[in-house]
Image (cartoon, rainbow, N blue to C red; front, side):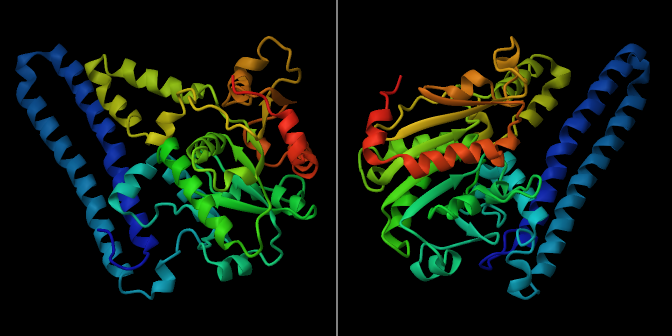
Length: 391
C-alpha cells in the first residue's frame, strides 16, 4: 500500500492504523479463545458443538475487523494519490500534534516502518518548522539565518521529535533560543528512535560529517546534548568517529540529560514480563504484543558498552523525583524512568536535580544553566583538564 509518490503521509497513516488494528486485535482474540478453553473445559465434551460454533463466529469477526482495516487503508491510500502532492506530503507532520504522534509511533514501530517503506518513517536530519532541512548550504542558511561557527547539536529521546526541545513551561523559551543569545547555533535533530541505537549512532556520525561541510559558516566548535536515548546515540556516534577523526576534534563537550547509561528499568521490566507471559499458554498472545516493541526500545534495557570518547568533557545531568537526593528511595525512583545510577553511568562530572521528572529535563532552567556554562566557558585547555579516562 506504499505510494510511489515522493511522500504521502496520508497513505502512511492509513497503513499504521491498519497495522495497529492487526496488532491489537490478536491478543484480544487470543484472550477470547483462552476464556473459551476455561469455560468449555469445565462444561466438557457435551458442549463441543457450541464451542465450535462460538469460536468459528469469533474468528470470522476478528478476521473481518482486520480485513476491514486493510481495506479501509487501501481505500484511503487510493484517494490520497488523487490529491495534490502538497496536501499529502506532510499532512500529518505539518501540525504540532501530528508530529508528536509520529515521533511516538516511530519509537514503538520505527524499525518496522522503515522496513516497509512507510512514509511516516522519520528522516534523520536537522528539522526546521517540522520539516527536514537538507544538507544543502542554501537551505541551511534559510533555516539558520544567524548561523555561527559554534554549533550545539540537540538529540532528543525515545518517541520524541525535535519539538521536545520546544516544550514551554511558565512561558520560558527553548534551550536553543537561550543559547542563541550566547552566539551558539542550536541544531535540533529528528531521528527514528525505533531503529537500533548503534545504527542511529552511525547515522548521526555520518550526518555530522556532512553537516559541517555545508554549514553556512566554518564550524569552529561543536557541543553535543542528548536527552534520554539521545545521549546513548551521541556516545555511539563519538565511538564510530573515534577512528576517523573528522568532526570529532571539534567537539568540546557532551552533555547527557537523563540518559540510561546502565539501562532503563521500564524496558527491562517489559522484557522480563514478556518472558514470563510466554510460560503460560493462555498469555502467550500478550507476550506477542509486548514483543512488537521496536529494536530501539529493546536496546534501552542494556547497559551501553562503548567507552567515552577521549578529549571531550562528558557531563551527566541526572534527576530524581525526591526532594532530597540522599533519601533512601531517591536513586531507585530516579526521574520516574531512569535511576540516578544509570543516569550517571561512567561520568565523573555529575549534576543532580531534585524534585524533577524525566521530561522536565527538556526545559528546566537549571539544565540551561549547566549547558550555558559548559558551552560558554570550556576552552580546549579546560576540556583537556576536565576530561577523565573512561571507567
